[in-house]
Amino acid sequence: MCSRHKCRSVNQFQSLAELGLIAVVAAMGLLTVSVQPASACTVMRMTIHGQLVIARNHDWPFGEAMVITNHRGIEKTSLAPIKPATWVSKYGSVSFCQFGREIPFAGMNEKGLTVDLLRLPQTTFPDPVDVEADPKLTAVNAIQWVQYQLDTAETVAEVVDSLLTVVPIPMLPMVETVHYFVTDATGDVAVVEFLDGKAVVRHGDDYRWDDGKPKTHACVLANSSWQDSQTEQIKDGSLLRYGRGVRLVEMAGNLDGETVPVDYANRCLQMVAQGPLTQWNLIYQPEERRIHFRTQRSPQRRWIDLDDLSFDPGQTPQAIDIDQNIDGNVATHMKAVTDADNERIVNHAFDHFIPAGLPSLMIKQLLLDYPNKLRVPQTAP
Image 1 (cartoon, rainbow, N blue to C red):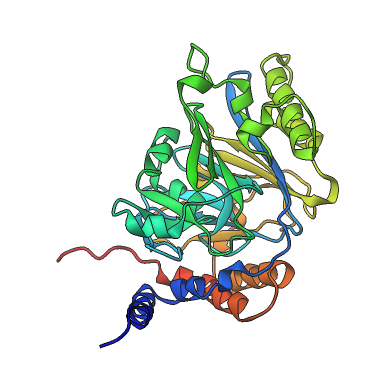
Image 2 (cartoon, rainbow, N blue to C red):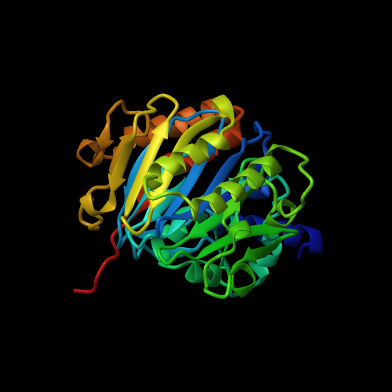
């Protein structure tokens, strides 16, 4: 017979063994390692000559990344520290990854859904104890939430509904203080934030005009909470970029017929750029199923048409270095993604962002191993 304290310790150890390495690391408190603070970003959704355009700056200490295709029909289990969600991807997508395959900061799927995360310092994700206790909930890593939505959702409404059953939980809380900006091919938009452990979603009739189009102030996001962004007092760079973005989105509806939508979107991104911190410019055209991108190292215009790609589960995912020095359509330059590609970007991210030590090594190995655990579901004979 054991004391209540000792029995509880034994039960906790057994539970950790069942949950695996991620949960062990989290329970030991190792995932709260100190890291460099993330930088900021800005995203704007606008309509130019009737065309839907989403423009995003990625502001970060480094720009190294891979542009990677993700295929439909792939079985996945999340990299969450507790109650990992499992799913089979319904849609193919293109995502922009700095911390390894399946851990993107941004992307668009073949249905025109776009998902972007941006830094929000006051983010507080759900308490893991509460998630453990709720039988309806499972979890995904807070950055991997982007890929989960690209895999499973066609519309913003589906993304919002998913929060009833799947919630983001961070592995590296000091890195994963983020909120999310989601759009779809119909023009719908939502801002998803986690404040005081609860999902706060800006979506629906309160954020639309009578004709169903989203209000301008719901079409821009920087690095303040959506509510704080509504203040008229400019206190910091985030609020300045938000206010400037709102004006640029308003102006988009009154451009002359000679203005090329992508050109205007690029000018908007220049207006909210943050000097050397702005590593990439992304412009999504959901209706055309095209993504434009430029980087500091390769500022020439490049794009990728999703119609040129195969998302068949029997094919090997393709990738290209985001800084590859080419022009125009990159589809023909994409190659089968390899373990070495994944290792290169994971090592770079950890070497330049995460302090060295046992927690860093353990989490890095999880990210290196993860792509090899993806499977096409087995079918009955």
